Image (cartoon, rainbow, N blue to C red; front, side):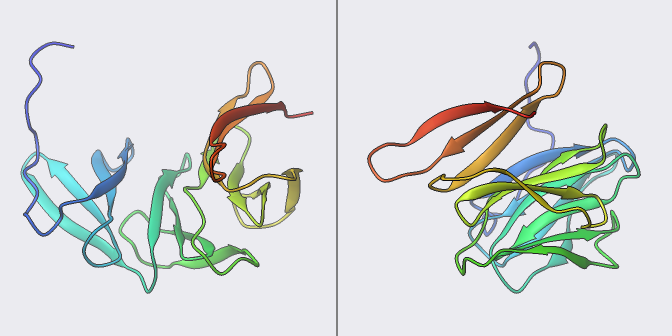
Length: 171
């Protein structure tokens, strides 16, 4: 790319921004504040502004979006969905593990959400229904990616001394 430049300047208290995503419906950038308060932030480019989208009670990761612009994120050991402005949050999935789960991956094309939890990868519909286990026997699936055209799911498996990227068929 050419002409790289800063487009939003974050206050020094936001020193570990994580999980950047672009909301095409709302035309804004969203990310998690990983060091300060547990919150999702959003920034507008025109005019330039940085604001809190929502505060959470536990560690937050995400965000992901569906075709309607709804926001999907994890808070502690739960996956939640909210309106793009942070209102109307509902719990879609709760893991048995007590430690935080990774970022949810929203497959807006097929209407699914994937997340690594309880030593497996689970999938459920955008409303939280039809939960199923896709892969078992994992350490901690921290990040997930899909190749829908070829039918593969990829993930980063965090295991002491054996961290690795893995894949499996979605069939």
